[in-house]
Image 1 (cartoon, rainbow, N blue to C red):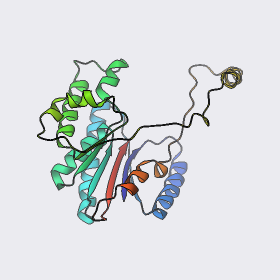
Image 2: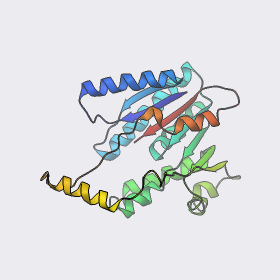
Image 3: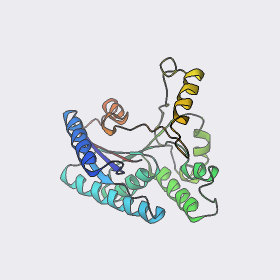
Image 4: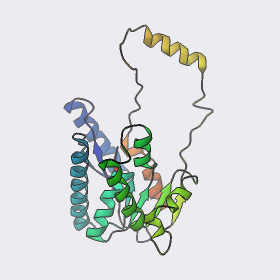
Length: 230
């Protein structure tokens, strides 16, 4: 299995190098080869197009070295990469949908529904849905909306579809109002101006994708490429 991801540099170069080496070693021990590409953020649209081109080029190159049986794309940008890679290589791809990206950005006030980013994302979305060899969603609730999209309506048959819900252990992560107030008071005591954020560091090699691959490995036993751009 090969995992291709686009990573931001959030620490020093030394810390990133150390963590990358550790993650590659851990992944290798599980039979996973991790390819880390740099994430480009600005200017937004050109940076995204550039990352898509880099992702497609790398997947095509890796496919020539060792043939892939399946591409697993988690989200819209990886979906665009997998869609374009399929056009180049013929390798089928699974579109793992986290949500309706264009609508979410518009609802949050980041995009104008009449703007280029919204319209371009919707056009790419329909191309992905039209050619995806399988679809995964988080809930059944999104299915009626997707099935009404032109990309799926234009297909003669629907692709295989699975719902893999995101879940949480509420007994372990129980809400504690007193604890929340205590933490707020501690943070306020520091006198830090501006918003306060709590970040969760995502360890790529332990992400749920590996579990999905282990339960749905292609019959041929060949390699799988999973692509993610956070």
